[in-house]
Length: 596
Image (cartoon, rainbow, N blue to C red; front, side, top):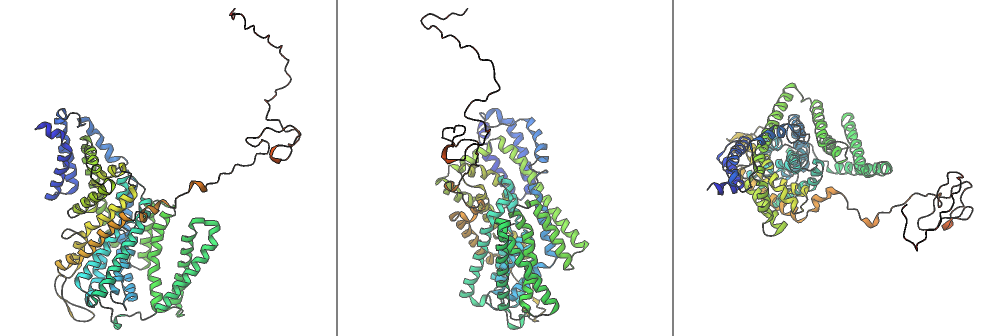
């Protein structure tokens, strides 16, 4: 029995961890306690393991180095987490989400499902500025859910679109989960951001496609805004003209900057166009020139600041100007400036943001410390080899591995959130994926899309809990219409999430089927045959492969004659007239050699 336990320590250890988590023990303490318990057992039974257990008491001395080394306390990559968390919470308090939802809701209001489109659009913008799911879901739940219920939206559609749009912060940079995945996979956060950008935008488009289909199939479930609710009036044509002018200015700036800025000219040109139209909108509003409609003014003035913040964070990272940690620091400063300009910045707001940031950072840190304790023992019992053999031996090769891993992560996401999955599961999957030749950036983005479902799974999805906390539980009187509004039940929130979970599963399949969505992070492939190497002209040397030219004669290949005094490099150098040595007599080979 002892031999069986000793030789199967890795699967027993992994199964016991799952049991601890399912019972409900905190993840960090489950990891650390499991690691220490099995370290003690492993040392005792190692003589019976046949060499499969490599544990000894002195190995515990490695724990302090693991804690204070580059993997935990001195990890510069993870320093981006508190910066982006602080930025997201300050933006939530600044009222940016409220202004965006009101303005974009007015823009899409005349069409069926307009409020749902606005929620998805604003959810993507908040994801690209905050990177925090809780902040996005709570902000949109507080602001947009009462408006959607006021104008007759189906409760399942309304709750589902709010929860799903909030989870876009999982996959659209600067996502916190992408930072953790890049750290656990040993890859660049900037590459992970670049790889995840297109899949995040495609997922946003699929959400909008679902709303379009639902507005056709069930038009009464998402009516258009009534005329009296469109306080900004008409003016879409004016907005289109403003966008065309912005495009023309951006293109002109791009053409002007190409000779000096090269590949960065497109981004800089776009920035010039956006700045010009923003200044024009501000002047038009302040001076009452009426060059633009009220709707166009409001859309430009409300939309540009978060876009500028996105450029400040992601643009500087993609251009190579800043690291993700530096981008997060600049984003935090930008969020403080935006909140100050709106008059929403106060000492109380900063205290709340700092408290929430400290809480989340401590949560991540404790899980990471527990994971280091667990991995020390798990690697000591050759658990990584067991997992690698288990996964690489799945039928179907690389495809079978991807299907099996995604099913495993999807099922575990019912019980674990994305931080727990990233710290427990990903370090076990990465070596097997690397051995199969799978690009780890693509693999990380695929896992990020899959882990997104952990926020939407009934009954343990955190996004559903966040929405439940702000959705009405009892009937209430609407302050605008004076009508009594029925509450939103937990069942309606859960059923509303199901279609979006299925969409996320479809997105997993699309990421596997079209890997180039992610692999574009590598840039365009270089064709070796197009590389042209040119050697500089060297007039004092003869061309390669030709006989040396005589002094005073024309050199080979029609070159110019050598200048007077130019040394003849075809002959050995002369160091002055030395006395001639007498020629040595030729040896007589008919006699044996003499060594005297």
